[in-house]
Length: 470
Image (cartoon, one colour):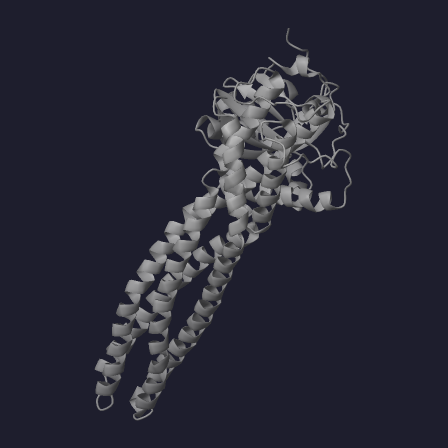
């Protein structure tokens, strides 16, 4: 029997930063399962929630555009993260950062408490979106128009904040929320953390499974700590690629200007013409290396984004698996009894199997992706060195050019060309050296994480074996 919608109250539900909760739904959005934390915060029993549409907890303050965006993403088989204001059974509210992922025949939603600076502006942004939607619907009488207007306004708002796409914003926001949570957990002492399982117990037991999840969690935590380097590297790739393209255009233009001016001179014009041709020839030779650098930088963009999103999603997913296992352990007399995930029969076993399967799906290619990145970065480093060779050649040209330009009064205008060239070449050399150093630092850092990747692979294989028939 459908529940009557509660009346919204301006009262926030108690929800701690160390708590994570989840729910699963079918393809139509009806709740299949969830953990005890979800039920407590929402103010319902699990029995009351199972079978109900997930919008049983939807708050009227939420813009429709956010849910439309969410549904479009997950129906396309893509993960999506969003800030969501929910309404509890008593009408109170609670904000979450939700990561929603496709699973077999449905969806999984993992939620945490938002506490980062990114969240601070969200309530007012959503209020503005909602007012905009309501205004459009009042004018047109069409809900569809209001949703599209809301999506357009959301895109404009995020663009104003420096995000080209919602996907860029959501991974940035989720990473910020998880980093904020990690920092807070350092100062928290939680009951139940004394039990972390035992690696000596088989992975088919609750104790053995928890121990392996703890090891996976620690590995993902190390990778998550390193994610700033990945993100910064992605930004540098874009910046340096743009800089190199602009620099190549500038050098070609300087070569053309020098050739035109030298043709108008007599005497030293011939010598300056040779210098101008030297600039042009070196620029042409460098262009091939620049083109390869640009293509290599572009090809790295996708695996970089995939690695970042896999680390973020995997870290949150293994955290919620661990939280759920701790919940189960608290109600289990002997954590060393068999915990069946290959043929789950209880709701608890089914939920745990889904969580683990989703985690493995998010992270199964991560070690290989990171190793491939290291190889690709070495190739990029080689292209950087090729460009640097041409830069060193170009550094000689202003010196020669100034000497020739000083021989004739009419050629003095060349001095500014050579001064500009010298300045641009010096700037390029500095940037290339800095970039090459950053790439090498990252490659060295990845080598130090090889033991982490091997541990992830080993325990992932063990855990995956538990749910082969799930």
